[in-house]
Image (cartoon, rainbow, N blue to C red; front, side, top):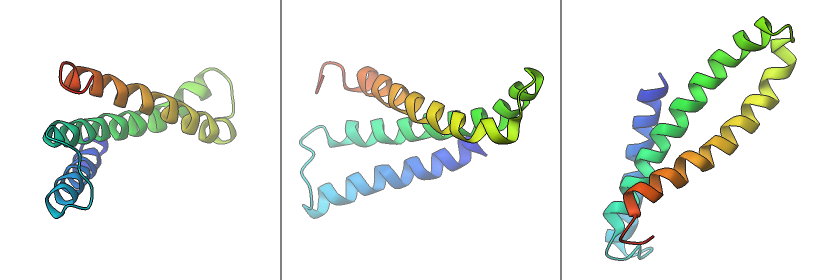
Length: 101
């Protein structure tokens, strides 16, 4: 589910960048396809990681003896936010190295 939702959101993100570039709403420069690809792949990674961590963390917390219902929601939100930035910036580093970075 995470991969399919991430792929759908990634395609929407890529289409939005392409549409705004073609309509002249925002100029991403000559490397706009790389920026669109970075956003698309980043969204796939972030959503997949969020789905996996959100579904597996309650099991881990229960095994460690914590209450999974009260502890998982804030922990998952914080973990996904932090890891989302790390995933996005690593994808950008790999894809945009030598062009924009």
